Image (cartoon, rainbow, N blue to C red; front, side):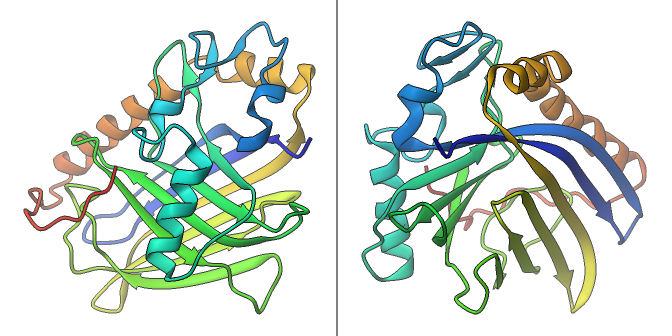
Length: 252
């Protein structure tokens, strides 16, 4: 079984117009979608499409109107990348905690048949408080088996404290023993904001799954609270508020 857990840290740093930074510890699940029934089999506190302390519900993820999540992801990848994407699909995400799920971003990878190397990836972002979903797909950089870098202009309104005139620089390492995602946002060629996800891989076994729930019992609630708390702090610091533009591109 290739599915696993990742434990580590998320760091955000705003450099302009007001400085603001924070970090917090997290765990995320890395699930190969063809292994879902095996992953959750005989797990007391983990369930598939059933309420539990931690649970995976198909409707929480990309294009819930499609029964098969892997097929839905491959269809979106194929449409955006301009060729037929094939292979096993995995997702790195937060599951529901006590029935509540919120994912600022989930990462989907399409792999070779051996599940040893990704050849395409998709980031699916959920904005707050609008709860719109936006999917952005990339062909994995062939120059390096473990790393992939991508630059693009902003298309989707994520934060009410950032405008649309922003360019993104995203860098991915793994998923392997380590998973790193670096997101650098520039406005007028100056760095405005950075976000970093640094995680270490752990085996998906009873001990690690139990530790994840003990260490992070209310993780998704804490993430949502943290978003609103730091939004309040940014407002109090005097950061400009940007209303939702009508021309945002949203996919669900």
